[in-house]
Image (cartoon, rainbow, N blue to C red):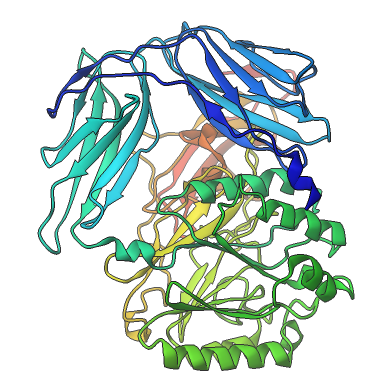
Length: 625
């Protein structure tokens, strides 16, 4: 293919700090810093989305040199004040990084536009003056047949290394990598320890958690896959798919142990246009986003049938069968595509699709007794998970799957959050909702946002990562793919895979949310007809989903409709401790009482917090607290 000639030279990073470590469990080490870093970066200009690479730098003044003639750094989209940019005619770009005189590390981005109009992003992580260590991993899992692991590091001060006595280490030749080896365990044992980096004064700088299993690593070689859906390539709303999908794929690529397959369960395109499928395939074929060797299964949804030629476009551009029966790492995987734009009922999957599913399930149950059968379909089986009731699911699908209790079925379509308590259901089989990437909402509570805080940077996008544990159970991790953090406890489908082990037949919500001792409401602003109300965040065993806010007069009558305020727990750290809500439509000159309850996804209510206040009689009487 002709465009392959556009690749540039291989990336080279010549920052090789050194350190000396003695063979003992606690040591001193000094790591010298260099003033110059040279980087020749390989990023083809024709990629449809920006790369995003993180580079760790010392606190001293540094220089990054990027060789790439296709970037236009003369008018960068963004760069921090502490980095200056200069570009020569040959395309060499020099980033002069000022010395970080602050105590802590700093992280910022360099964003430029390629000559083709696309963006490139570099993340620069620079050490500060206080003792700190930048590490390649925060947690490591090792097994009986693979007792060795490595940590890449960059440090700016002399530090002590403390670790369990069952670990030993040695430095690599360049001095910036530590190689650790664990002593063997007896069969069936597991142990956990921490590798701690601390400065001369004693405080911990960084910690790496180490989990060691005596069992061999075979279970790492069992299926480990990601499930996402409703990516809606071409949809113009929100941050846009150009941001969401590359970000999600980078997070999946960085997951450990490595995700070896990705299932995209329908609504691949937004309008079923040829260009949307072309752009999608550029993303999934980009080795900067999806590692070579990682399988990708793409499944058609109702949006992929919006045009009569949708099926033909899928075949020509995606090049995969509509329905697939695959054996992955010794386990059966069955996927069927939506065959019409119908949202419910028999028309969602035609007779050919249903027959393919039935035949494949029969074969899988005979060939793989005692193993789970993984099934993927866009529109969910009826009367299972949230979003499949009241005629919105496919009853024929439920009938077929109900014959096989070992089925674990993944679907999308509803755009309901994976944090919703009813996104997993076990009746005759296991049904799971995988969230969405265009928009995400909660169906159990119709929440809104009356918070007066600044604009939230992250759009919520979600997905699942699925793997086996050491007991052969299937673990389903729920992920916010925008923030790259887990949301809620893992779901575990237990072995043996039959109805005797079903634990999600009825979700009761667990513990009731509660406010902390001493928490109270407060007014931060008051007028004759509105207030700003400070609400501390409540705690739940999984998460607090929302707050019900009611305002009553002294007779107990409501003076306005109740507010169901989202806790915004899945929107980033800005609202970790409290919310401030703007509440209007209040009567002037009255004594009012505002009551707030915290709710979880199962609609369980906490004990209330209350606050009584008087509204002024006239608009002119304003006061701030």
